Structure formats: C-alpha cells, structure tokens
Image (tube, rainbow, N blue to C red; front, side):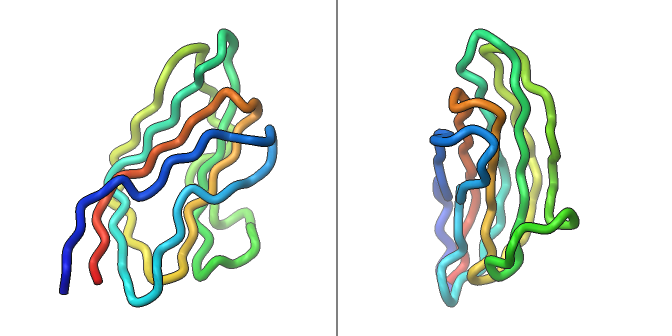
Length: 110
C-alpha cells in the first residue's frame, strides 16, 4: 500500500453561496484529511461552510462539518481534523463571497 503525503486540494471560491468541490478521493484510494485552512482575503468579514459528501451524495444537513462560520477580514482559520475518507467521498466548500480560499492537506493510501 502506497502512502502519499500531499496537498489534497485548493479552491478559490468562484461563485458566492454556491457549494464547490475542494477534493474528491480517487478510486481504489483512502484518504486522511489532516488539515484544512480557510482564508478570507477581503477587507470585510464573511462566512463559510465545509461538508463531506459520502460517495459524492447530494448535499444534506448531516454532511456539514462547519456551517456558516464567521471569518474576520484578512484572516485565516486552520483546522486540524484527521478525517478519514473512502474512495469517491467529496469534501465540498462554500463561502459568502468570492474572496475565500480553501486548502486541504493530508495523506492518500492506495
């Protein structure tokens, strides 16, 4: 079994208040998401959401890890998580403005 430590995904929000994919686990792979960072690049505060959609399922309330968390202007949240994911699971993100960036770091096992 190969172990690969890597940047799993990077996303800059392209449409405010719209869910978009940060990372999808490849086929025949398991993943451990160790850290997610959220950066608000704007001069005003905003909110964000993070969800895990098992096997790429449609979004549902139970899938949210973080829901409408507030982030001050020009600041960053860093979350150390240790989330385990199976093949085709999807980490999705959303923010109230297009001034948010998300990064996921972790390990792929294949």
